Length: 103
Image 1 (cartoon, rainbow, N blue to C red):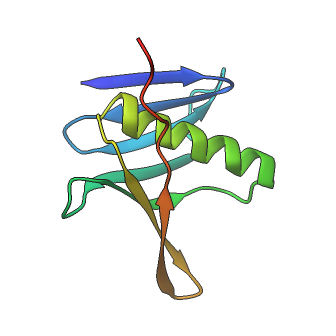
Image 2 (cartoon, rainbow, N blue to C red):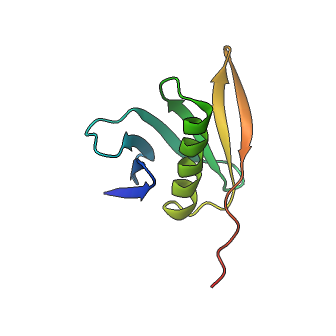
């Protein structure tokens, strides 16, 4: 089962069973980026293995915002971290989720 998350010009399709998420640009049939969402020890989202082309800072910020929205809205995580490979080593950065929505 796939869930489509569409906000702005990016579409992220997440597969529940494998937690593999593929990122598409609006109107395109092939993905340009993909990543995994796993659960950490304290129940937070670990967003890892992001494979994407070189992007401008504005585009990268937009992509990171959409990734957090999918982790929060589709998978139900309240907190999270990014895990990235940088210069041969792993770095971890906190992913700030949106504050709870008021009813």
